Length: 500
Image 1 (tube, rainbow, N blue to C red):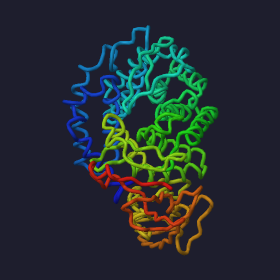
Image 2 (cartoon, rainbow, N blue to C red):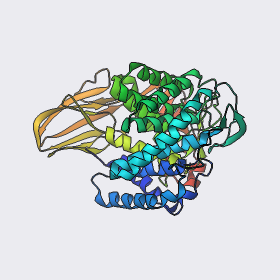
Image 3 (cartoon, rainbow, N blue to C red):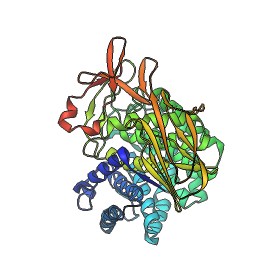
Image 4 (spheres, rainbow, N blue to C red):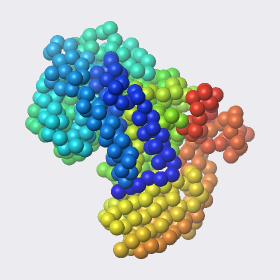
């Protein structure tokens, strides 16, 4: 078990405070997201379940979340249709892809709540949705329009005027394939041959389309990829892992910004970033690293964490959108203070993923894959790490009740060196600890340059009007990336920084 402290805990507490507001409570939650049935409610439930697990050692906070969830589920049945999902019953004529996408989030939330409560009622509801909705809509994916150009929308997305091949299509191009996330989660819990076949066919249909040329929403694309990855984890067929890697590579090549955020649609550099997609990329990078062992994904994960989280989390705990720092557009500033209707809730799932990844065991050794302050617990043993190397100039490790000497591998990014230790090609230093040892590791820092982008460890350095000089390059002063969670909405309006 990982118990988080320091800056990451501050971010978790900020997010929890925001998700305690009325809009995320039972009295208001069901009036939100009318054009996306189940989307707001599902993301909220998933967020609260994620934070419940984050606060494993904090009984008071867990109970407050448990009460909030219980009140939502006390009222939820009166807002569901006869088959147990949000929106109108599927009429076998035209599919609203926003309803499909929204109910994927509801399924994700419902499954996580079932795991917490073990109530047979919720398991039955999942079965009914599988049999009466998922299996009913699955054949229609074969006609999903994969060539039609569409109008693009705003941050929230909308159903367009077009109905093509039985689909009411969304300006969030490709969002119907978000349902692979919900379907695979159902299949993981309740496997059936019919659902397996349906998932396989929908994956094949997604691979028929060119997500870049169709200008798919990057969030929809990576949510689909996460669904395919979960399906791979269940059936272990290599081709599905290969598909995920292929999709992720397209995202990196055509959808990624300088600060490791995203552009909202492929090929639209003048759009905005979306933290939902950024969280998707963080989760995928983590899972691909753990599955393949390839260093690239670990480095990618660290850069998303240290850069993009700093630009999208707000001082109220929510998550907002920024301009896309990409190609020749170097300005990075707020585009939307908070996407309260989606991204604020997805942040909670991302935070849970970070907590679970802060320290993990492999072959009896302990790995610390990114820099954060936390305590690792196993039985009576605990090891405390002061390891946020953008806050501290030293790593401090305190062991307690360690019964057998343990090797520890700690990731350090390029440009950060530990005195007395050599890094391997993955960026890991190795040390060992026993009993109640206390270890101090001094760190040295140097700026490095990649494609004329300045990095301090994995953190971008940017030009700012009000930035204190930190490093000079080509006659310009650079300083560490703004942490937007430190500024009010009014202050954030005036915060502009330039990658070059």
